[in-house]
Image (tube, rainbow, N blue to C red; front, top):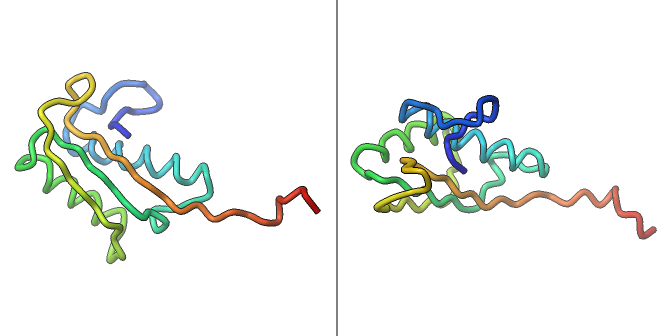
Length: 105
């Protein structure tokens, strides 16, 4: 997920806002499948400058997960991202299956 504002379809202009939006976009997709942030089993975060953006990623993750538990996370510095973006967040979630919707009975 990238820090694209779904209302304007443009990148959020400031670094902190963009990182936050990337996490919120991931959260919205997880919720659309019945998962929450607590259901995250793995995160991968790509940044273009580890020194500059890792503290922001840590701050946003603390805000969203609170006291934890935190999912395992890998953060990787890359030379470049799509459209010269600064961050991309990838999450793997466990989405519980609702057996009540099983039409095989």
